[in-house]
Image 1 (tube, rainbow, N blue to C red):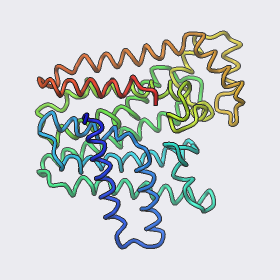
Image 2 (image 1 turned 180 degrees about the vertical axis):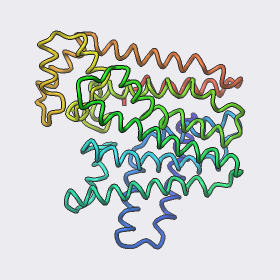
Image 3 (image 1 turned 180 degrees about the horizontal axis):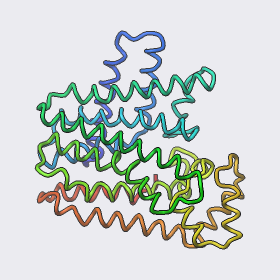
Length: 336
């Protein structure tokens, strides 16, 4: 069995174990909250963050059950962040099912309020899941500090994402900076460094040169799939990012490269709900025909190449180098 399949399965089992323990003795709204968090967290996640934590751990120690159990903390952290993100974006679909704030039967305001509190519970659970594993206090404290920094940096990226898109001054470099803070740190770099710290790896700071560019490449590819991907494979609408008004590299490059009439066509529709299928197909044609799609792909490949070029600096182990390359390929050369 390959690394991804083996440890994804183990992470899923560890998550089930965590939620089973959490459900014991719960009643009323607390039971409903934990049940919904379990359903949301277990629903089709790729377990990217736990896998990178396990991979980082492997750089310094043999993989064991402790790191698998500890990696659950990152899935709980992700649920916390995704719930808030979906409320901010007013998204309807996540992982092929309803977003968390659409999983309750109250009115809209109460649904959102309950969901915000449930996200806070998931944040608390993420710390609990890490603290209950028997790592040495020094390694645990360093990993916990880094975990707090990851959430802080993700919050900064989220603030940038919300505010910079309001006007017309946002640039492709701004989008890259948002990807660095909002995605790269909490998807690749931070989880891998946390694992490296817990595993006693001697120089976790060197992971930055791999994790940050790989995370940026991943998010650019995610934005490309968010417009040009297959909805069944993605588990979400390919129109949602456009209807939310996201100014991705694709959109900003199109503003630079397309004809004025084409740019106006897109600007008049970006951020509008219920765009027609014909209009969205026209948007995609403009983005592709003007060269913006290829330019965004090239940017993703540039950051992917940067990450790959650092692998030899991270480890002398051939199996570990191979797995670092495999993980990079899974992140960037993907269709969902």
